[in-house]
Length: 531
Image (cartoon, rainbow, N blue to C red; front, top):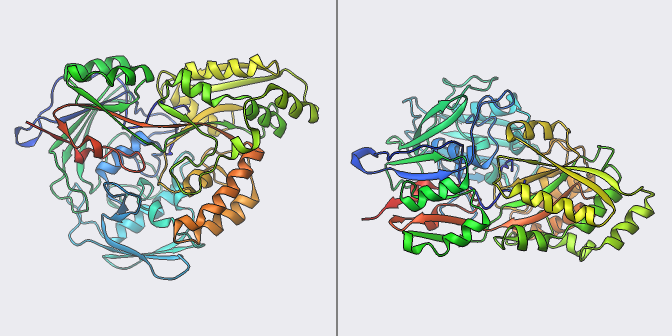
């Protein structure tokens, strides 16, 4: 998710911005709004002038907003991984090679401004995202589209450049969110934090100094889709730190939260039942990793990257820094996803200074190798700095590296990383869709998510195309396992941990077990307030 942009995110993810809000909102019909707390931020920057524009948004927080306010042809169900119809009644491949997808829209669809939604709006939305081609956006998910046809007002036909059994999953993401062709320019991003969609909710935001300080989601009475909305209004409140958010939850000012909880908080919340709070835990698919700019002189030699892989102790990070709220990860594809295998563990085994030294010596690398590890200070939670200092210590204790760390605000971190400014930097990833394809394909090839110079033709030109011909996704596992082995050999990225999902919720809120779907996306329509 964003990828969806994400370095050591602290536990799974809800939604958005910063700052503290207070007071209790009232939903329509006098029902009190469900209040969600978060420590994420939404702000306008030169590189991200329209954080809620589907052509630009590519992180878990923004995508949660878009999932609630826009429709896609398909969407992930309440639980499970196979997309179901939303704006579309159905979408089916019209050929055996998975190269032509035909969708039929529901009748009577309308945008929040009252305009009719037709197949032309779908085509406009897809073509617009591809035309704008925003550097840090989700356009790569649409890159395999050859053309979009609209035989009638309710029919849309996608012609693909090559077979892709995962395409229905891709158009279930906000990369393919349907915008009003009369409200959005075809070749230019919008401005600010407004949305004109046809999703389950309409959105009202309050903005101060270029940042969202309050977001209110109201039930969209014109919505026609597969989601059953169980509340009238959801309010999002944005906190500067996890401590103040936790305090608001325990006092009753916030009803539910999950991003970004600190490991210490999770421990406290497990025993907070006397304060009317319960903690829900479930497996997650969020991953964290180090990314390498393989053209930067300090890490261009493969042996340097391999030596880092040989030294990093994931078990220590998960045990000491994350207090066992995450699991060590030895592959880009997390456990629970078909195609997972522990390629890094198979190649490097236990952390070893002697093996790392041998790798550097064989490549004639002079030690200690100077290295700067860069992390973002305000996007993945307050434990990020602690983890990077642990990584620094692990590398420096070997005597083979002279590492230092630096923290950068997210507004600068993301665009600067994409421009190749950092040699080694921390990122995180929530899946765009729950398939091994989305943990391999975004990180290799010409238009990869990281803007990385790393290329591996075997992965990009053979393994991924072969995997996409498999309609039964279990049959594609062998291709991803081969790809994972190649990534472990070249180390363009270094997987660190796989997060668990935690939701902390007030006792009178029901539906919290459905608050996140299989891609860790927020489903606020599932939440209700009990008596």
